[in-house]
Image (tube, rainbow, N blue to C red; front, top):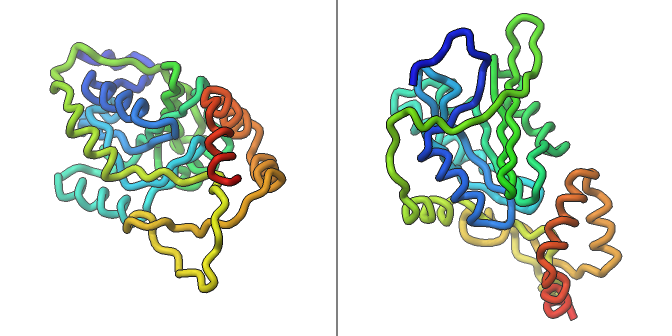
Length: 244
């Protein structure tokens, strides 16, 4: 599909890249994130969605630094430039709001704020989406841009098995509210969760502790958590079985 040079910027996805993003979203009740891969002559056209190793919760995604470095190195080996693989941050929200949270905003500013340009894209569970282009040229600024799937391009078919393997190899659920367990007399040193063991140590949580943890969330994250718990009506029953 030819591009109109006078057309305002928009974020476009190939049908395969979009299907993969939706597939990853539906693999979990938590967030999941990655990077958009684009063509060298069409930097807002996403042809693939690539995961890196990450820890996820219902309100956050945390990328593993080493995995991100490996991803960047691999992309350079594929003769791609940073603007083709390191400028478009894609992630999902498990709730029905695609609006960025305070954590999203802080992450976008911290990680991508020094880039000449970058895009934050969010796809929510209900299908709503949000895309914002940040740029430093001239006075700089931010611009919300439309999103659509471009069916006028050539695209590959789906690969559900391969996508599932990518998800399992890269996404680790981080327990937001750990269940109570007996602490060992001599605690073991915590290990990297990506090495196959938990990166935190469990400790007894009371109901007051849980409420305090929820109070620490910003209003948007707290609402998303409440929405998630409302959908998962069995959450508290499961928690009480494990704790009591």
